[in-house]
Image (cartoon, rainbow, N blue to C red; front, side, top):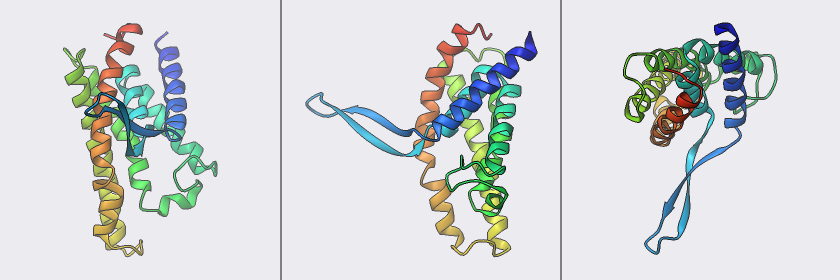
Length: 190
C-alpha cells in the first residue's frame, strides 16, 4: 500500500510540476477602496508545486516526481523554460532544475518530523527546500562562470536566476504551507 501511495503521489506531483510551469504566479491584493487588484509575480507555480508534493506526499514521492520531470525534459520534450534536451545541461538554469531533487527530499523529510502539522512549520520546510534549490543553482552558476561557460557576467546571472525570482518564491512558500496543511489532513498524513 505504501508503494502505491508513493507512486500515486509522485505522479500527482509530476503533473503539478508540469502544469505549474505554465501558470504565472500572482497575488490578489485589495486597494484602498477594497477593490481587488492582481499583482503579477516574476515566477510560476512550478517550484511551489514540487515543494507541495514533497510536503504532502513525502520525500520519496517528491524525489520521484523531480527525477521524472528532469528525465522528461532531458529526452527532448520542451517542458523546461528554454525547451529541453541534453543540451539544456549546459545552460545556467540547469543547476536550479537539478536542485529539484535535493529540495524535494529535504522538504519532504522535514515535513515528516514530529509536530510538523501547522502552517509555520510546513512553510519553513518549504523555505528550506527552496534554499537547497537556490544553493544548487548558485553552485552551478559559480562553477560555470569560473569555467567561462556562460557569456553573461556572474552578477547578471545571479540577479536573473536567484535574486530576481527569490522574493516571489519565498511568498509562494507561505502559500505552499497554507495549502499543504488541509491536504495533509484530507489525505490522513500524520
